[in-house]
Figure 1 (cartoon, helix red, strand yellow):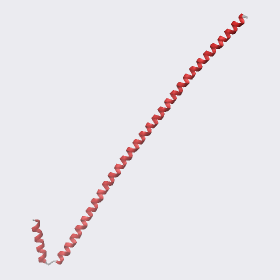
Figure 2: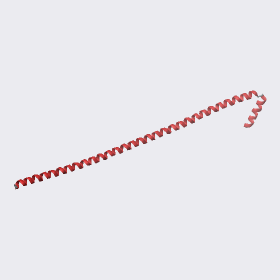
Figure 3: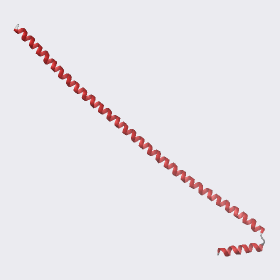
Figure 4: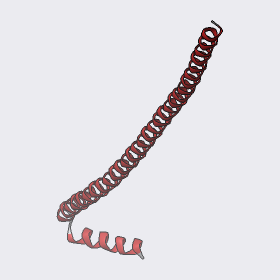
Length: 128
Protein backbone atom coordinates (compact mmCIF):
# COMPACT_ATOMS: atom_id res chain seq x y z
CA UNK A 1 0.00 0.00 0.00
CA UNK A 2 2.97 2.19 0.66
CA UNK A 3 4.12 1.47 -2.80
CA UNK A 4 0.75 2.44 -4.21
CA UNK A 5 0.77 5.70 -2.28
CA UNK A 6 4.30 6.49 -3.42
CA UNK A 7 3.37 5.66 -6.98
CA UNK A 8 0.28 7.79 -6.69
CA UNK A 9 2.26 10.67 -5.10
CA UNK A 10 4.87 10.38 -7.80
CA UNK A 11 2.17 10.50 -10.49
CA UNK A 12 0.56 13.55 -8.86
CA UNK A 13 3.94 15.28 -8.59
CA UNK A 14 4.53 14.51 -12.27
CA UNK A 15 1.12 15.99 -13.15
CA UNK A 16 1.80 19.08 -11.02
CA UNK A 17 5.22 19.51 -12.65
CA UNK A 18 3.65 19.06 -16.11
CA UNK A 19 0.90 21.57 -15.22
CA UNK A 20 3.52 24.09 -14.02
CA UNK A 21 5.52 23.61 -17.24
CA UNK A 22 2.35 24.04 -19.33
CA UNK A 23 1.49 27.17 -17.30
CA UNK A 24 5.03 28.53 -17.82
CA UNK A 25 4.80 27.86 -21.56
CA UNK A 26 1.36 29.52 -21.66
CA UNK A 27 2.70 32.58 -19.83
CA UNK A 28 5.68 32.69 -22.20
CA UNK A 29 3.34 32.44 -25.20
CA UNK A 30 1.11 35.17 -23.75
CA UNK A 31 4.12 37.43 -23.21
CA UNK A 32 5.24 36.84 -26.80
CA UNK A 33 1.71 37.53 -28.04
CA UNK A 34 1.51 40.73 -25.97
CA UNK A 35 4.86 41.81 -27.39
CA UNK A 36 3.67 41.11 -30.95
CA UNK A 37 0.44 43.04 -30.36
CA UNK A 38 2.40 45.92 -28.86
CA UNK A 39 4.80 45.91 -31.81
CA UNK A 40 1.89 45.73 -34.24
CA UNK A 41 0.22 48.71 -32.53
CA UNK A 42 3.49 50.58 -32.72
CA UNK A 43 3.93 49.71 -36.40
CA UNK A 44 0.35 50.73 -37.18
CA UNK A 45 0.90 54.06 -35.44
CA UNK A 46 4.15 54.55 -37.35
CA UNK A 47 2.38 53.84 -40.65
CA UNK A 48 -0.42 56.25 -39.72
CA UNK A 49 2.09 58.95 -38.72
CA UNK A 50 4.05 58.47 -41.97
CA UNK A 51 0.81 58.62 -43.95
CA UNK A 52 -0.21 61.84 -42.23
CA UNK A 53 3.24 63.35 -42.83
CA UNK A 54 3.13 62.36 -46.51
CA UNK A 55 -0.37 63.81 -46.88
CA UNK A 56 0.73 67.05 -45.20
CA UNK A 57 3.73 67.29 -47.53
CA UNK A 58 1.51 66.73 -50.57
CA UNK A 59 -0.89 69.40 -49.29
CA UNK A 60 1.94 71.88 -48.72
CA UNK A 61 3.40 71.15 -52.17
CA UNK A 62 0.00 71.61 -53.81
CA UNK A 63 -0.59 74.88 -51.96
CA UNK A 64 2.86 76.16 -52.91
CA UNK A 65 2.26 75.22 -56.56
CA UNK A 66 -1.18 76.86 -56.55
CA UNK A 67 0.27 80.02 -55.00
CA UNK A 68 3.05 80.06 -57.60
CA UNK A 69 0.52 79.65 -60.42
CA UNK A 70 -1.72 82.37 -58.95
CA UNK A 71 1.24 84.77 -58.74
CA UNK A 72 2.13 83.98 -62.36
CA UNK A 73 -1.46 84.66 -63.44
CA UNK A 74 -1.47 87.98 -61.56
CA UNK A 75 1.87 88.98 -63.12
CA UNK A 76 0.64 88.06 -66.61
CA UNK A 77 -2.56 90.03 -66.02
CA UNK A 78 -0.52 93.05 -64.90
CA UNK A 79 1.74 92.73 -67.93
CA UNK A 80 -1.20 92.31 -70.31
CA UNK A 81 -2.95 95.27 -68.69
CA UNK A 82 0.14 97.46 -69.04
CA UNK A 83 0.58 96.43 -72.68
CA UNK A 84 -3.08 97.19 -73.41
CA UNK A 85 -2.76 100.54 -71.64
CA UNK A 86 0.28 101.39 -73.79
CA UNK A 87 -1.54 100.30 -76.95
CA UNK A 88 -4.64 102.38 -76.14
CA UNK A 89 -2.51 105.37 -75.16
CA UNK A 90 -0.55 105.16 -78.40
CA UNK A 91 -3.73 104.78 -80.40
CA UNK A 92 -5.30 107.83 -78.66
CA UNK A 93 -2.16 109.89 -79.25
CA UNK A 94 -2.32 109.01 -82.94
CA UNK A 95 -6.00 109.95 -83.13
CA UNK A 96 -5.38 113.23 -81.27
CA UNK A 97 -2.50 114.04 -83.63
CA UNK A 98 -4.67 113.24 -86.67
CA UNK A 99 -7.54 115.38 -85.32
CA UNK A 100 -5.15 118.22 -84.45
CA UNK A 101 -3.69 118.10 -87.97
CA UNK A 102 -7.14 118.04 -89.52
CA UNK A 103 -8.29 120.98 -87.37
CA UNK A 104 -5.08 122.89 -88.14
CA UNK A 105 -5.56 122.31 -91.85
CA UNK A 106 -9.17 123.53 -91.66
CA UNK A 107 -8.17 126.60 -89.64
CA UNK A 108 -5.21 127.32 -91.95
CA UNK A 109 -7.33 126.94 -95.08
CA UNK A 110 -9.84 129.46 -93.74
CA UNK A 111 -7.08 132.00 -93.02
CA UNK A 112 -5.62 134.50 -95.47
CA UNK A 113 -2.04 134.04 -96.66
CA UNK A 114 -1.00 137.02 -94.58
CA UNK A 115 -2.61 135.60 -91.42
CA UNK A 116 -0.97 132.24 -92.08
CA UNK A 117 2.46 133.92 -92.39
CA UNK A 118 1.88 135.84 -89.13
CA UNK A 119 0.84 132.64 -87.35
CA UNK A 120 3.94 130.77 -88.61
CA UNK A 121 6.22 133.66 -87.61
CA UNK A 122 4.64 133.79 -84.13
CA UNK A 123 5.04 130.03 -83.76
CA UNK A 124 8.74 130.20 -84.76
CA UNK A 125 9.28 133.14 -82.41
CA UNK A 126 7.63 131.27 -79.51
CA UNK A 127 9.74 128.17 -80.21
CA UNK A 128 13.02 130.04 -80.34
